[in-house]
Length: 306
Image 1: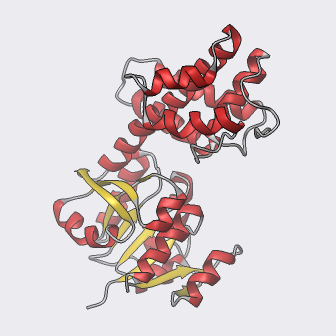
Image 2: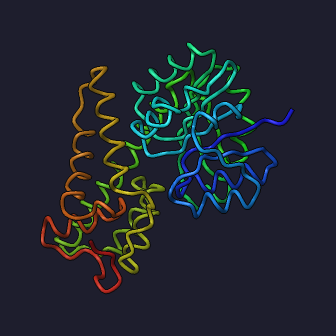
Image 3: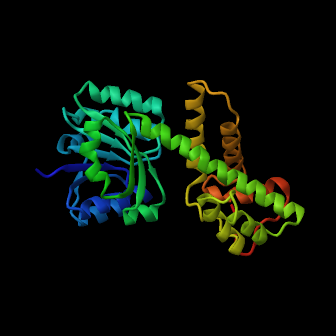
């Protein structure tokens, strides 16, 4: 029997994922909305369009959500004509968004009452990797549900990690993003320190690259920034990063966990938003350091600015 897949969230990541699912031969359905470009492309490729999320749920076995965060996920499930009104026994909702574990637990409970399941499968890597089917995902699911969704996840993910029961994926992703954004904040301050003290950035980068301080995040940010002032190497929005750190800190508060680094990283990102980089990328923390300290770090001729 053909597995019918529903999809909500056709942004930079979602559109690439949806194309890979269609290319793999799955029956794919989407919901119509005002932004038609990606949706029309998928319909031309064979996707079926429905008017409501209720219709989507009624006609699909597995429904993938790939939106910004918990408010957007809940707005798809709970309103009139939302997913929950069309959910029936045996269906699975796969949340690939970076969501709050508390919200995911509530959604899992709502689905369980209907005989359905939630799988949380937040993603890592970039929109280019989504197009190429090379994403990473951290999955929270029962063993049975994981076995059902793994073949679908394999169509757009290179690495799939089953982290444990429902909620484990979102918890993992928030902790992972704490590390990632923490690296970015530290790198930005370090580059500012180099510029302020007269340490050559290229030489400093060579030192880091040859030692234990090197990281994938450093290599995403540093080479482009040093060579041309390009802060787009880490292609992740500052607004989403600040949202993820807010989720992380709320999760830590609920334990509670003693620690102040999560707040420091969130504060660095909020500074960036307040200084005009609400539409910028995480790499623009370098420009934030320039503004805060009156120090020129990057080649201003080719650097991005707010």
